[in-house]
Image (cartoon, rainbow, N blue to C red; front, side, top):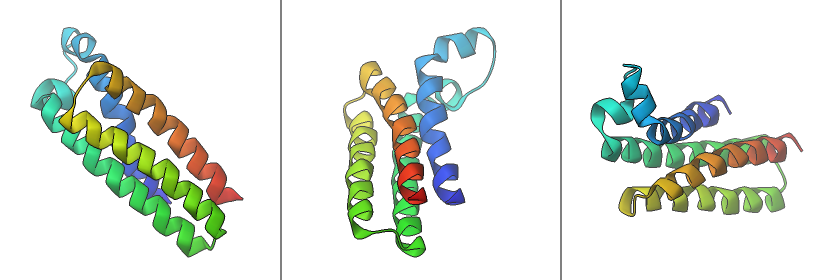
Length: 116
C-alpha cells in the first residue's frame, strides 16, 4: 500500500506543477516540468502511474479482497493508465488536468475498495 501511494504522488504533483509551471517559474521554484521540461514530466507521470496501478493490484490480491473488487480496481487502473499514456503521446493541457483530477479520485476509490 505504501508503494501505491509513493508511486501515485508524482502523477498528482507533476500534473499540478505542469498546470502552474509559469507561476512556479515566476516564483523561482524549480519543479521537474520547469527544469527538465514537459516531455520528461509526462514520461515520469506515465511510469509512476503504471507502478501505482501495479502496486494497488498486488496489494489487493495480497490482502485477499473479493475478485469483484479486484476487477473494479482493474477498470479504474485502466482509466488511469489510458490517461497517463495518452498524455505522453497526445499532450494537451485539458488532458493533463483531467489526469490530475482522475488520479485523485482513483486513489480515493482504490483506498475505499481496499478497506472493504
